[in-house]
Length: 133
View 1 (cartoon, rainbow, N blue to C red):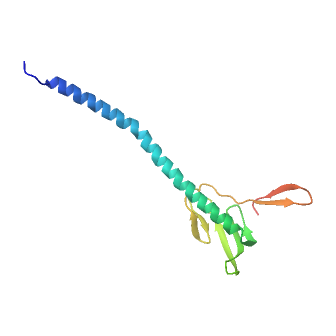
View 2: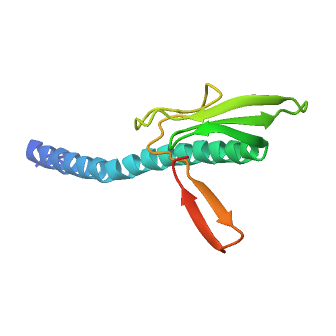
C-alpha cells in the first residue's frame, strides 16, 4: 500500500474546512454590523454635542426674542463687537431635515426639535410653560 491520502479523505477535509470557514464568517457578521452601528451613533452624538454647545453659547448672547414658534426662533443678539444683530434658529419640522442657525446647517438629520418657553412667576412660586410663543 502506498503512503498518502485518498480522494475521499481530501474531499472530506475540504468540506469540513468549508463548513468551519462559513460558520466563522457568519458569526463575525453581527460583530461587524455592531461596529458600524457604534461608529454611526458616535458620530451622531458628537454632532449633537457640538450643536448643543453652540446653542448654549448662542443663547447667552440673546438680548431680545423677536418672534418664535415651536420650530423657529428669531432673536436679537450682541456680536463680539457689541453690535446688535438679528439671527434665526429654525427647523422645517420634517424628520431628517437639518437644524439651521442663521441659514447655515448647525446639525443635520434632525429627528425632532421643539422650542419651549418656560417662565418663572416670582409672585406665585411655580413654573409656567408657554409653548409655542
